[in-house]
Image 1 (cartoon, helix red, strand yellow):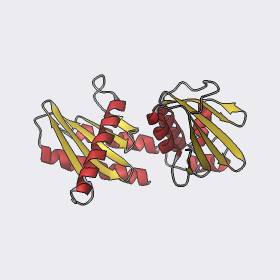
Image 2: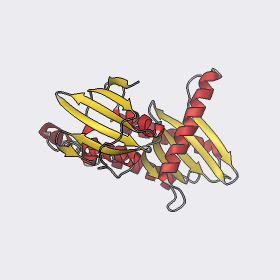
Image 3: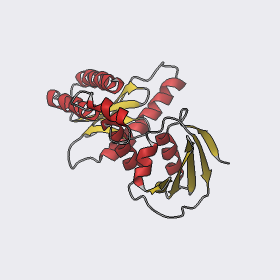
Image 4: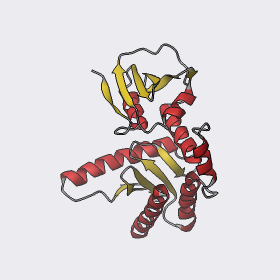
Length: 244
């Protein structure tokens, strides 16, 4: 049975993640204002995309700018060809970056003008600066990232060569999901913060907003109280940046 809906109620990145995690062959059709786009999935990735006469990854970046449109996800549909090689998470991150920097739809003069009138620093740069400032001023937190609840890393500053940002994002999303469910099931109110302690260090996951969390990485022997305070402070700063 096909999944149907509208992008106003379920955004494209959520649909893509769901389709890729199923790892089955499928086709997503999105229709908006007499235009029709098709995304084909196989083996947990987007393998082909088409919109009008255009094919490939640029189609996905265009679709991420669509705020509404009827969609239908049909299972067991093989792709007619392969025109996409970037991983689905990489496509979403690049698409969001382009939207943030106003380059996703260069054909829209209003958008270009709006972005030109924005402050010099883009939102992505502000997020990166906030994480850098945290690490520079903290003796307890040695790495941090802003992660969507779907595991997408929006900004990260982790020890180079030691950790993969993608793994940090996936772990943070898993920890948040389990923590939130546990809080709800045990009637402890709304999720705020959680700690996981290991023999070589700690993981602190802190609520930012309804769609994002901050994950902080610390050594083992630290002042946890101060680390908690710093994590909450940077989470508030990240929330303010995202809110704009």
